Length: 352
Image (cartoon, rainbow, N blue to C red; front, side, top):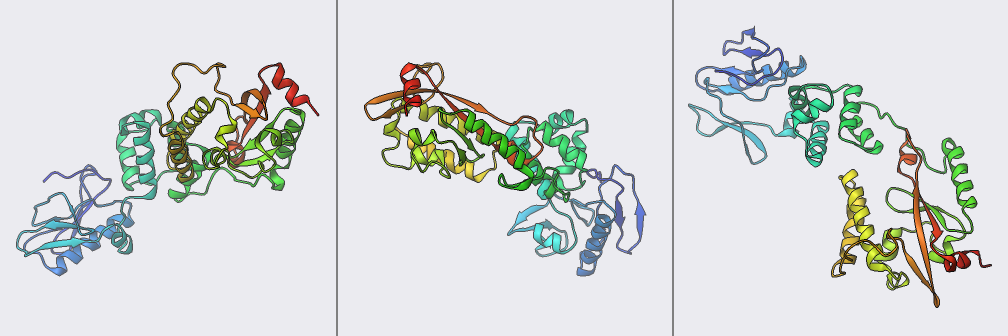
């Protein structure tokens, strides 16, 4: 009977002998005649031997009759001739306990990313200069990737640095990209650069946000638009969860929907980040029933126009980032710079 492919398989007969088969055949345990506990144990020992030598079995053939394994009550089961019931093989946890390799965490993550990017195994193989067979083996756990292959896959799937470290850990490899707190000594020169940028931007507001829209740094001018407690707050929750906060923005519909679109783009780049998903859910809930403005925003870019007392302060926003970073914290930082749109806003920011 033809088998599916793994490398260098081993088959075991009911007499316990072993023989080498061509590399194109599947590593399997063959049991002839009526099935007994001893023969099942023999098949499992042969399977473990294949795993130890780098060959992962994907099925067990009994009475020279193989059917695809079905999932029944959390276990693999194969109907067998001459038996009332089924030969039950352990599920993923049981397989691990028995020393039999199952689907890997790395493979599961790659499948998720590949599906999210809309790529087939063949398309991913083309982007990583490998074969679709190798991609399949990586996803099923039948092959372990090198660090170089993990990073090539991450490049092909446009995976951010934090998730690249997660992929490396899932593959049993050390993380490649350091993650240091912004207040840490290693980032002191970068923190000093940010402080200088925020100070040089006065009298206009400027703040530094992390990947989850938390305000890490802010200059004094931010308090005039956002309030004195802006530092340490979350920008999304400030306007979606604080009663009356949205009323301080004249063009709330344009700004709110632009924020939802930005969060959706961020979710596409960080599809498995639970906090981004939560923030997007809150933003979508806040805009439910709010009509999306048709056409381009009035100022060409959807920037907030603040209501301060009896004045309207119209602003322009700009985002700055560190380029070509190799550290997780710096890679995720975003510097939000605010400028006046007109003379009235200029006068507001320059007033003592």
